[in-house]
Amino acid sequence: MDIAELLTQDRVIPSLRVSDKAQLLQELARRTAALLNIPQKTILDALEAREKLGSTGLGQGFALPHARIEGLDRFFGLFARLARPIAYDAVDENPVDLVFLLLIPAEPGSDHMSILAAISRRIRDQELARRLRKGENAEALHSLLAGG
Image 1 (spheres, rainbow, N blue to C red):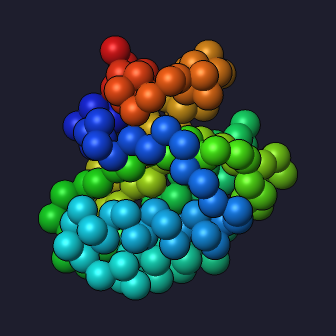
Image 2 (tube, helix red, strand yellow):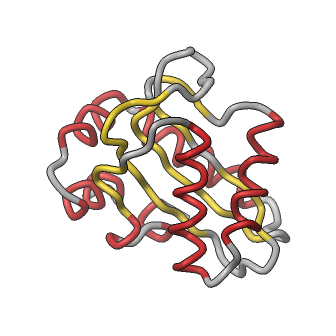
């Protein structure tokens, strides 16, 4: 599975305004709840529980929050470029401005690790990250992420 299968253009946010990690996770949960018809609290609780295991801030300004969600029948992706970087407890201690949310069905099999790795490799590519930071709109960002 590649990013194009996870992410539609309507799930790309070119300038998300949040002030901190907690607000980011809450906003991601709010937006995905509306799209998936799953309670916001279910999504937020799962994201917060995953963050307690260790930060999903992977370095170079990139975070990959992810969680298993009961009742989800397929993988779900959402990308947000933040209006300004925020502290995220990333491994390199740098602020985050590129965020790819991945929600995983509660019984996904082993696919989720390869999907997480593929997303991480793609977005941690320094040239792609530079282009994502300069992309003008959701269409341009989606095209970059989907490999266009």
